[in-house]
Length: 564
Image (cartoon, rainbow, N blue to C red; front, side, top):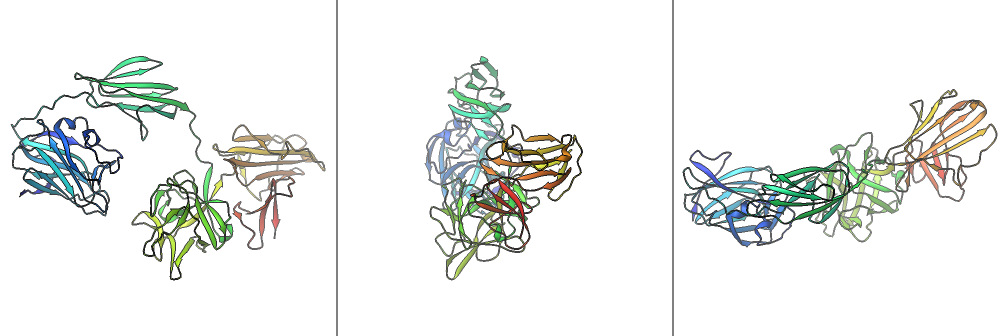
């Protein structure tokens, strides 16, 4: 077999000309062995390929292109060329890349009796040239040591040689995309008004577009873009001189844009702040990452977060878990894992650094040190204790005996509303002199419900509650109260809290007594049978006061400051 030199190439040599290009599809058909050309080759490329003659199970259509091989398995892929593709080739140029920066794998291309090797040098597409002797080629076989990704193969012939004319084919099934979503045929989707949709029918000279509002129209070219502004069903058909594609149907329902935010994760600064039943997340603030909810068998992937002043905004891509049990014997139960929700575990092998999600509870101890780092540990046996850490080089959270970056524990909190006097924010402990006409404004996050309670009494008298608990759900995220004339002889209490999915923020209350505000105090209500909850003066929930000082005690809807 003749082995030929492989060299990095950015352009073709002057004596060669491009005959055709074989472009591989991208997709997500993991380990899906198929003999269908459309599973691996673009519509234009299929004219040059006769059939797939051999492939292994380690072949994947991924966002990185055609992946041959896996982390542990070699891959092979052989296809024969059609009459149009069987040319007298002088070289092929392979566009390939590493799957992972740590990989150092290679691929061998066998073209008849000729052979060349491609070893990608990076994770970005690069062109690698394999020189051939100019004889007619009839098939191409690719074999990899382990995983390598391929985008396309360009076939060159000598200048003056014949460039093949591929057999014309009908257009491919239209592809409909919006945002990062590729729609399914006959799919139904909810979108916000103004969503842009792009349609492509490869090989089409025009696209027939049909919907119930505008009827049928013909768009010249192989692409079409539009925006969705109302509920509608669309049909798309690609057309050229050969024929028509299959019809692609998709339906859109316009919905209100979701309000995001309103929930944050706040740094847990002491072990006393750990409360059973509360929701938490694990992050590494130094690296700006948190545990991702993405499904992965043995480790927890990362997601980037912006940690500011000890908190970051919550979203569904951050792995959330609920603490169960008690100090020294905590279970961490996942709430939004992309796989099957369960409990954190370190795995079944002492030699592995796994952090898995399993069906049965597993015991962990959690301590918060003086630096605010969380020491989350579990004992595999009497000799092996591992800690949850962040491995920056591998971009993942796992369990380690030593080393790696420290992690922190963050508790899920509803963003509390803020209180303003004439647009100046009032904080705990502030005392503000008021005049009639001043505006007391309660302003909450747009994603949260705003609940308030207003009591206005003549001095020494108590007004009836607004409802059985005294709380009123406001119809917007802002409530304004104007200080009335004669307020000097009144007792005024305006309390507020935010509610998101049934979870409440720490209530805030603005009170006025004898004409002067006393800042943020407790909510007056009676509910002696309710469970008592404790908060620091900053609003951080704790299991119980750990030392003497000023705390906020909530019992049902009664909230008050307590000095211990």
